[in-house]
Image (cartoon, rainbow, N blue to C red; front, side):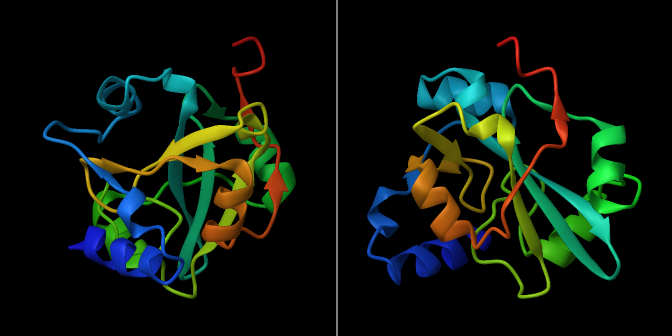
Length: 158
């Protein structure tokens, strides 16, 4: 199970005990916000896109949507999400538990500007019923992000 990989990954940083596992699903932004008793926009959702033979992961706020024009301008390609099978193959995580942790070295991670308005966010941890509360600084550190991008819309007014 992917959550075991994430637990092992976080044990290297001595924060594996901070992983939360729920008796209910946290597979969607709505489900995760209900399980965590937080606002949907505080969920750090990880979206997986095609990038050559690997995955390009964008971590966004729960209320943000990919802006295709911004994505193409930033990455020089059309935003094409991986299907469920490809997501598992290229990230090691199934849809509903995709996160920017314990990834294959070929996976590329970026953080979207929509997250910068929060001090704390809740990304998944490799399963459809898990999350961890991280500061933005911790998210940057543990996701091995290549940096910040501005590829989303519809969050500025929230």
